[in-house]
Structures are given as C-alpha cells and as structure tokens.
Length: 162
Image 1: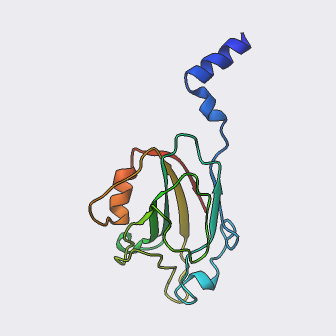
Image 2: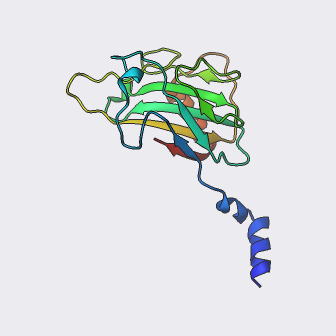
Image 3: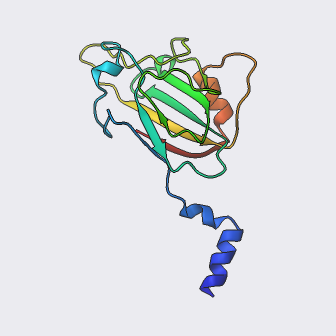
C-alpha cells in the first residue's frame, strides 16, 4: 500500500515536494545583519557577493532583486538582474553583467547596482531575493524592476532571500 501511494505521489507531481528549498547566502551578510560599508554609497558601492543552491528542476532562468523595505515605493529598488542561467550558482562582488543576463532599471533609472544609501541615523531594512522562474524573458527595450515583477508574477517556481 505504501509503495502504491509513493508511486501515485510521484506520478501526480508530489515528488517535487521532496526537493530541498532554494537557499541564498552571502559571505559578507548574515541573516538580519548589517550590510558592510563597502557595498553602500558610503563605500565602494559595489554589488554584494552571493551564492545559492538547490535551484528547482524545471527552472528556465533566475532573477535577483535587491530592495529597501523601508523606502517609499518610487525609491525602493536598488538592483535587479534577470535571465540568469539556472546553471549559475554565484555572483562575485562587483561582478559585471553575466552572459545572457540583463539588468532591469532600478529606482534611479540605472542599469546597475546602486547600493544602500539611507540618510544618516535612519535604519532601513534591505532584502535580496532570488527567484527561480519557469520562463526566460525577451524584451525589445530596457524594462524597469516594477515591469519585471509584472512579467514574473505567474512564473515563479521558488524564492530564497537574505
């Protein structure tokens, strides 16, 4: 009986639930920790090194978005990259755009990383989120991070965040 249920679960897609959850980490940021000054506007303003694992099977591309939960909506997005190959499992600090990947415009209209830059004395909460997607995107023009979220909406397989 147990064998039959296991086979049925596999055939009906239940086997996917046994996959490890996707994980995102950084050698320079601990969960709920501070972002080192090097990666902010007061430092070198270079992108944060990241690594991830357990990308789900069926993932066609990855997207990475860094945003400020404390900022007003129009100044929320600091960094967005889409069409990252699912075979890729890291980004080095200050790494240039990956082959095949594209930047979405951040909240300042830049196609790059713009690190945290809160006013002195303000505490902000930043999130770096990785999305496993069941699509690869092709656009005729540059898109904003808000537009990226719209096209990703129903194509997310899994997420991980710091």
